[in-house]
Length: 270
Image 1 (cartoon, rainbow, N blue to C red):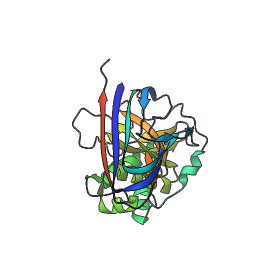
Image 2 (cartoon, helix red, strand yellow):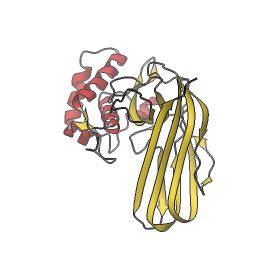
Image 3 (cartoon, helix red, strand yellow):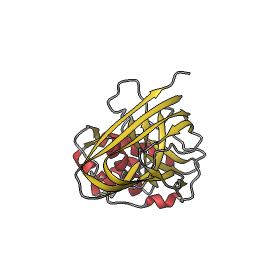
Image 4 (cartoon, rainbow, N blue to C red):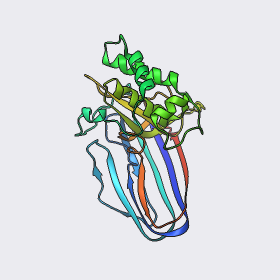
């Protein structure tokens, strides 16, 4: 499937600041699951640093904007050819060993209730893939999809206790549950195409990857109860939502900041 992405992020400041420095993970990762046909990430007035591939295999770029800044726009446009590999991440070069992803963060710390849920989900399941699927199903059963009720700083434990959240919360809860069951897991940021009118099919999307013996990293979208297929474009991964954020940065100056984001994913007819 060939997908076209338009992703515009605009930062506005109520008073001019002296500059902005950002780290971008806005390029689709290089793997057998997807092939980039064309991709651009222009930043008006920005100076791009040297791009590099980090230890997790993700492409990273740095951008700085100097002088008086009242508005900063980051615009992503491009096309990607995707393949359905049943959620298995293939041909993705990385140097970080899977065991690193047994690390917990403040956002993926599992409390007792989450640990008990994970233990119950994997009990009696011997196969590693079966255990991973069981965890994803248990997370979706425990956390209902409800937009607007959680926020960027909501932790996995908080979302699990509330029993609701969005794709970010489903992904972080699954990461936390998997780690508590001894399975390396990480948070993945990307895009999702849907023409079915599904409320859970947010164009800017997140899911989790669990490390399964003999298969490697396998994606699980607990929010939509499936493994990533040709509708998904993978950008990058991290220990949690903050670590995997496509845009991270620092502003030099004191000013109130507002943010507008517009994302669309469409299918290109061939």
